[in-house]
Length: 276
Ligand SMILES: O=C(O)CCC(=O)C(=O)O
Image (cartoon, rainbow, N blue to C red):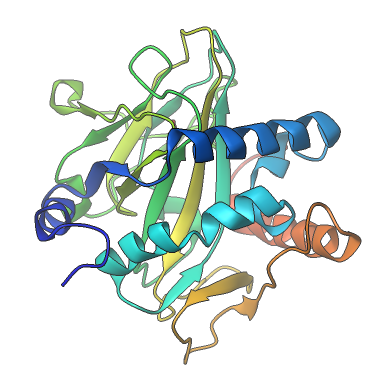
């Protein structure tokens, strides 16, 4: 018996490789988290730019709260079972009229996790729709192997390497509009992307990328993860503590260490690097 999702939702995730929209936070909660995040961005603007958008749940109380939200973890448990690690997180923010886009890709390609037993949760903290550049998915492609990706390093591409799958039949894509407080789940092999934000508000997405079963392994370099629920009998990751408030010195030190590990992982074998 699922804890948060219906059996139909679980079945549709298994069939399509994504599930959306899922109601999780109230509008008030989402507004509170957005305000806390934006206050942190104003105060620590340098630290939270570029690669600082990765794993900010290790240093900001509001993102830690989302990451360990019992309702989100219930839904994750419905999809991957009771033992749950938080591997990492990414803030996907597109400013108003921002040319930034996300090319068609499969997350598992460059994350170095094998076996990759997990799911990404993408929470909207502002309207994410076709105007603001919501995510788009290619249903069923999670059942395929990893496709060939070209590293474009295109300036407006938000992905680390601008990695792109070239021959995607966009007519088959499904838009995933979300209201603030709703989230979507997606599988590590689903082909997905998003267009630029043509709207007048920020498009703010917070992705826990990903929640993992502890059997999953990082194959490129040893790194950290947090146990969110259940037990980890494998010990494939070093335990990362939850943050003590915002930007404490110890938490920032761990965050920087994980940032270096992620750079090694995400740019493994790449011809060039950039600052995120
Ligand atoms: O936020 C976006 O538009 C894309 C996010 C994404 O690619 C992901 O969460 O895997």
